[in-house]
Image (tube, rainbow, N blue to C red):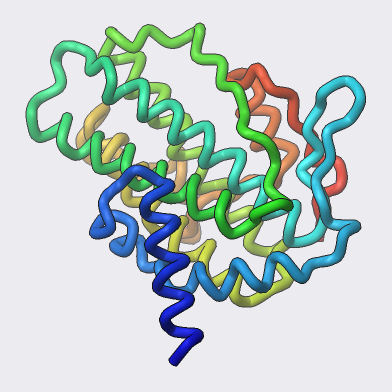
Length: 236
């Protein structure tokens, strides 16, 4: 019973840190499971730890810790992007669209805080985004960038699944990527109705595309001032 109380307290602390409602956080399906993950991550080998190199590059680490930090980096980027979108909605978004984009913002913030809390002292530092190429007052640009982030995020989780060793982490990654896929489908249909599952993202076998960390980090780097390295991430 004491363990259950402790888990509930941990979840409440994470909800408070995230700044989103408890309903939104628990809707991700990861609430009490996160409490168990926190203890597991703290016991991982020190060799897995991320480091900041002398030139300021953030090395994500190795093993499952590295993969969790990889996901954390992407969630930081998405949360920062949608926070900017909601702070300055471009003209042309309907009230319904604004509400749903705000929900996506809340999901991404919850994902970010999920990884931050789970990783604890093994988390990489907060990243500095670079959105200078985006006109947040332009609806077309905002949606095009959202599509890039969502498609990239889904492909990243799919590609990283084969690299995760711990089954608990794999289960939680599966829950998060299913939410990201819902986001991607919605954004795609805002741009072009019916494009939610076209050949850009679904292959001839009806399977979602996947990308490994090097390709994902290369694509994400143009939206980051911070330099990150996945050189020590697992490759198989």
